[in-house]
Image 1 (cartoon, helix red, strand yellow):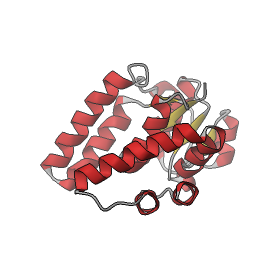
Image 2 (cartoon, helix red, strand yellow; image 1 turned 60 degrees about the vertical axis):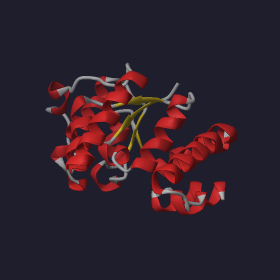
Image 3 (cartoon, rainbow, N blue to C red; image 1 turned 30 degrees about the vertical axis):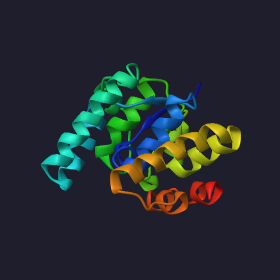
Image 4 (cartoon, helix red, strand yellow; image 1 turned 135 degrees about the vertical axis):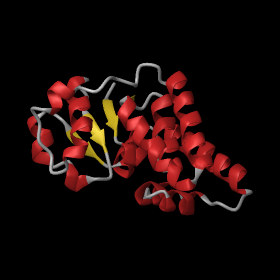
Length: 180
């Protein structure tokens, strides 16, 4: 099964995270992250106030149970030998190298140049592309996850979301169009 490091920027938006991890739970791929990636998510959620940080920490605890083998230690000894345009992202690349991941899912294309990743045997993937590929190979799996995410979004918000609007807002426009 494909092993993929999830960058913080794809874990923090709720709908994107729930889509990716729902597909992973259903057997689409094996997710990988580090304590630092999870901590970055929790710190980013502070922008929503104390409740946001508390909710992120609760969700992180649930992920630890749902994906007990996903969290791996940082690899600073590997990071020292690598280069990226943004040195703050080296820990993500080092994690991918140290865990023999196949890819990194990120929204930060400029911070993860394809040539640099190619040299390490990795590819950069965007979440919409990953989910589209998953949908093309197993439509039922992705449709089931999307229906669950939509139901959860409507439950939390009091209703009114349609699939296409929800996924477009979550920066998953191709998947939104496919599932509409």
